Image 1 (cartoon, rainbow, N blue to C red):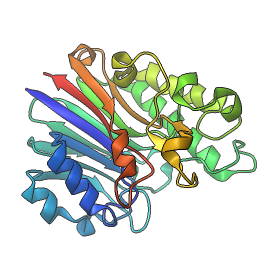
Image 2: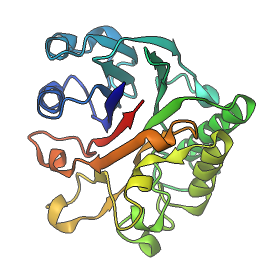
Image 3: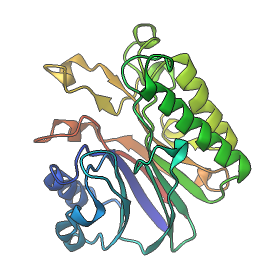
Image 4: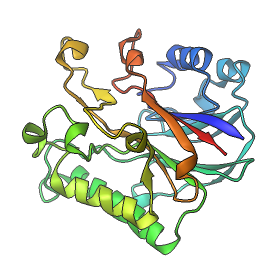
Length: 262
C-alpha cells in the first residue's frame, strides 16, 4: 500500500486551520502529522479536515501549548503515547496503520535560549526527553516504524545556515547533536529526508523575527522523518514544502514530505 506522509509544526491548529486544510486539498498526503497544536483534543477543528477525507485522527492535546495529532485517510488505531522526561506534556502520540506500519509523532522540547542545563531548566528537559527516547529504543527496538516530528535539532552542518555561528545556539549545539544521534542509533533509525536529499543546505524552519525570511534564508532543518531498517528502502520522494512558509498567517515551519511503497 503506497502512501505519502507529511509532518508539520503548525503552531496552533485552531489559528491555522485554513492552511492545514489548504495543504490537505492541494497536496493530499495520506497521513498528516502535526505538532504544537496548542489545543485540547476536543477543540481540534475536525469538521473541515474530515470533509477533505481525513476521517481518522489520534491526538494528545493541551490548552495553549504543545500537542500532537495524526490525521489519516487510511484506517489506523492509536497505540499509545509516552511522557518522556515525565514533563506532563502532550509531546508524543503513536498510531498503527492498517498495513502494520507504526507512526510515532514527536514534538521534542525546544530547550529555551541558553544551552546550559545548570542555568536553564528547559535545556535540561530537552536533553532528558532525548535520553528517555534513547533508552526506550534500546529497551525495545522498533520495527516497521516511522518516526516524524519537530525534533528541534538541526544535526548536520548543512542543516543550518551557518554551522560556525550556530554552534552555541540551542538546536545545533554539540551536546544536542550527540543526544540526537544517540536516539537514532538506539532505534537503528534512518534519516529518510537525507537519504533522498544527501547533499546541500536544507531547512524546514525560518524565524518569524526575520523581516524577509525568504531573502535572508537563515533556516534550520528541525523537522524530520525517520524509518526503521526494515522499511527504509521503501521510502522516496522526500521534499520540504518551502512555499507553505509564505502562506497567509504561516507557521514558522514548513511541511516535510516522504512517500513509502509498502
